[in-house]
Image (cartoon, rainbow, N blue to C red; front, side, top):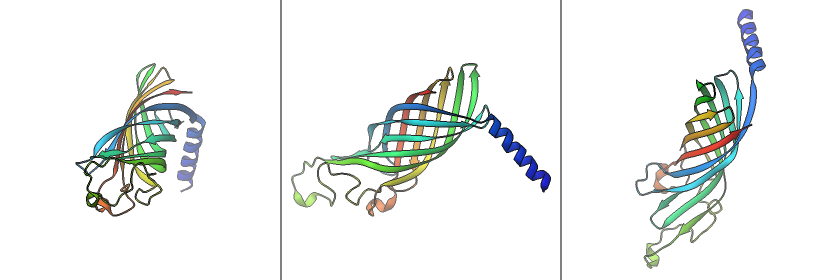
Length: 202
């Protein structure tokens, strides 16, 4: 038992001695929609923020950061455009392609808190009875009790690091919980998002 504890301690000391924390600024485009909803069309949004990379070895690292992310979907004449503050936590492996190029694969979880956003409803029917019980034009999305303010899900992606300073990434997200605070669609729909972006590593 003592030998095992000493081995673990020396291993942690060795990793700590190699560890290196770097950060980056990044931004890009989102393409988001809902799962399990064939009538939901994707909307284009944005992502921007700061990333952190804590290297344990030259290959393995822990990635996190703080991101502003615009998501949403379109459902006929109804659009939802929430903006979240997101905190991803992922493990990553970096594989050298050349001396100046690394291929990166990462996966983990994201945690999101809704900041602002709007519903945008453009009804064309003219029949008052045909309107469902949802907010009217451009009402704040998290202040009406219909959208949940918090979200959590899986995040995964691939990327390329160039010349130790430039980053290109493709990232996907799938939520675990429904974005609706009420019983719409029995909780089947979840947030789904794909991101493409670039960044600069300091």
